[in-house]
Length: 414
Image 1 (cartoon, one colour):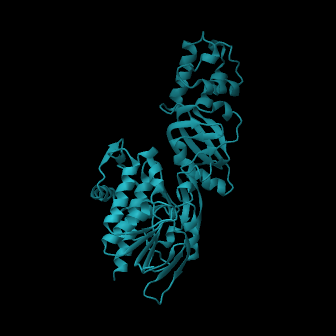
Image 2 (tube, helix red, strand yellow):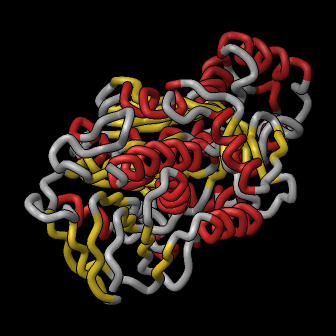
Image 3 (spheres, one colour):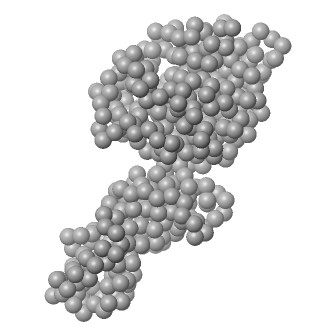
């Protein structure tokens, strides 16, 4: 096998970007991928349209055990730089409500552009290549020897861009964590994030299929963890939808620490709670001749309305006018503060991303270089950084990949 100056393990979004930027610095680059093709996970992003970034870029869009780390890193490769990068690769973008997609609306177009970029920069791509071991060699010309199922590779610099444990079918099987740990890095326990939450209440089986605009607030031991709002999906096992995904990493962490987690849903988040209760009172007077089972008709889903009546102990065949002040108050509580227990998340197979990974306290935020091993770099999901829904995890892949590739490529050429 030929000797290579920069070795990159993992040919996802971050790994391919790192390879392109390292090669642009004049380095010889070999990209190792254990699946039979590169960039498989890209094809499933944005429901097959590849939501590659977002016009809104703020620190709160990125989460980490060290909250300042992602934003510092993103400063080295910003959104305008990302758009220029893709334009150079031939990808034009379009914006929909801040979300950025390839103009063609095809995730495959992004993957094709990256593959063509690798070819243009003469990156050597080796697929079906399982990494067995990585040996740092301080006294040798090439610092790293990587033994794989396709032979051995040597390089002055090494980039680990192996992904996380989310969506393992696309190649993110967690193998990179083991490699990083063997090289002396601490791993923050990876947990599913951007994932559905499981709830033990039996009534969820009768609510399966309901979609409703709602706010979701997570609490643990009486303290608010996170909140979001949007379309919530009720399933036979619990709650789903983008607002749930956005707060799920906080539930996963709290549950992993053995803490109690509860979710409070407001099914009419458009109005302050006091205004909602006034509407309820006015509605009860206006519709007093109706049967109670039709009280919420035209407002909330029938399945939810039926559950509220059952929870409040109100017979559906009563008239609205017969409701007491206390019963109207109870219905208001259920509408505005519907509380459920959270006892788990769905598995890594259903998660879009992980929270956790390589402890970023051990990584330089500007270069992505390890503070523990000279010439070792990280990029993408392997790090303890996770973005919210909306293209932020791909932006993290582009930014961290570019930073790692530039710096590793320059170093290898010294």
